[in-house]
Image (tube, rainbow, N blue to C red; front, side, top):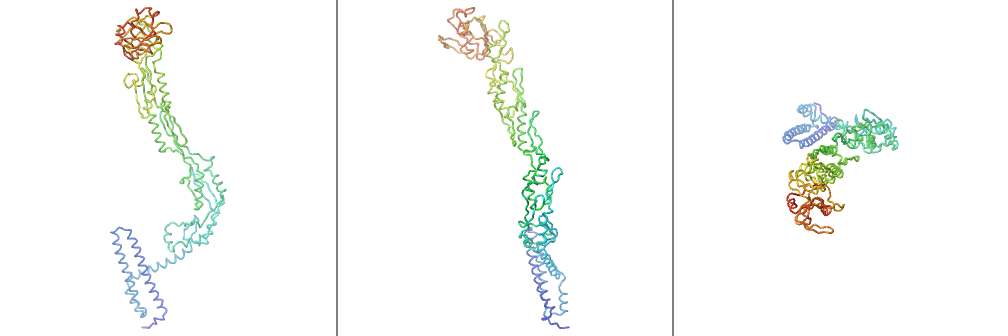
Length: 557
C-alpha cells in the first residue's frame, strides 16, 4: 500500500474542509427541519402532532447517525481502501440526506445572489414589465413609460374612451429610494414571489406627475361626463292614479360623476393601470331615489292604506260615497327632491264636513206640510229638522282615515251612534214624513190648535196668538219644542206674569195658560192678542203639558 503524506497533501486538506462543511450543513438542516416541524405542529390538532413529532425524531436520529459516521472518518490515517470501506458502510439514505441539503443550499445561494440585484421574470413595477432587469434598467423603463402610457375607460353601452399620458403632461420621477427596493427583500424571498404576486410595491420611490389644468380639461372633455352625450339618472316617483299609489321605475342613466371619475383616474395613474371598467367602480351618478328604496316602498304602503279606505254615509234615500279620490284631497302630498311628505290637511276635512252639512241639513230649508184641513202648504221659516254637527263629523272622518277604517253608516236611522253626528234631528229624514205623526199644529188665521198623537187628534182648542201689529205677531215656522216648565214667571219690558204651564218652542215664545183672557178664538187676537205666545185655556194647557215633549214638532202657519 502506498503511504500518503496526510498533513501536507492538498487533497486531504480539502477533504477535511468538506468533512467539516458537511457536518455543519447536516446540523443546520436538522435544526431548520426541527423548527419548521415545531411551527407546523403548533397549528395542528393534538392527534396529528404526536405522529408528526415521532417522524421528526426518526429523521433527526438518521441525520445524527449519518453525522457520526462522517465524523468517524480518520483523515490522518486515511488510505484509499479505508475510504472505500468506510463509504461502503454508510447507507445510501444517509448520503442522500447530507448531499441533497447541500445541493439545495448551493441552489438557494446562487438564486438569492442573482435576485438581490435583478427583478424576477414576470415582475412589474406600477404596471411596467421589469422582468430580469437590473435596477438601472428598471429605472430607465419606468421613466420612459409615461411617453407610451394609455388608460382605457370601458363605459356603459359598450363605449370606450382613452386618456394618454401626453394628454395630461404625464411625467415619471424615479427617486433614490428606488435603489433600496431589492435590498429590502430577503435573499430567499424569491421563492414565495415565484408563486405569488410579482407586482413590486414602490411606495414613494416612483412618483407620477401630471399637468393639473390639462388633467381637468381632459376629464371635462370625456363623453361620459358631457351633458350632450349622456342621460341623467331618473329618480323613482310615487304617483297617484286610478285609486292607488304606484312607483315609477328609476333609471341610472350613463353620466359619470366628474369628481369621482377624476379621483379614480388619479389612482389609476399612480398605479399605472391600463384600463378601468367604470361599471365596476362607484363613479356613475345614481338616482337619489331608486325603485327599490326601502323608505319609498314603506311610504307607498302607508299611502295605499289610506287610498284603500272607503266611507259610505247614508242620508235618508241619499248616499255619499267617500272613496280614495276624495280622501287623498284631505292630504298635502309633496316631494322636496329627496323625500315625500303626506300630511293630513285638517282644514280640508272640516271643509268637507261643512259641505255635507250644507247639502243635507234640513233645519232651515222650506218644508211641505199637510194641514188639518188636508191642504198641503209650504212653511219657509223652519227651525225643525236635521242639523249636522260639523266638528263631530270632521273628527269622525279623521279618525276613520287615521285608523285606516272603511265604514258604512246610516246617519238618519235615529240610532244612538248616528244621532251623535247631529246637533238637531227630526223624526225621520224625508220630504213628508220628516215630522212623524205626533206634533202640534197652530193656525193663526183660524186661531185654533190641534195636538196629534200617533196620527190622531188627541187635543184641540181655540187659542189667542200674538197681536198682529208687526211687533207682537206669533212667528210662523216649524219648530221643535225646547222645554216645558210648571209655575213659570214670564217677564217682558212692561209685564211680569206667572203661569201654571209653560211650553217653549222658540225664543221666549211658547204655549201657556192665560187666565186673563176672557175668550179664545175668532178675532180676539186682533184686539187682545198676546206678546207672541199661544194663549190657552188653563184646562187645555194642563192637558197639552202632559202630551208634549222636548223635540216634538210644532207647526205654526
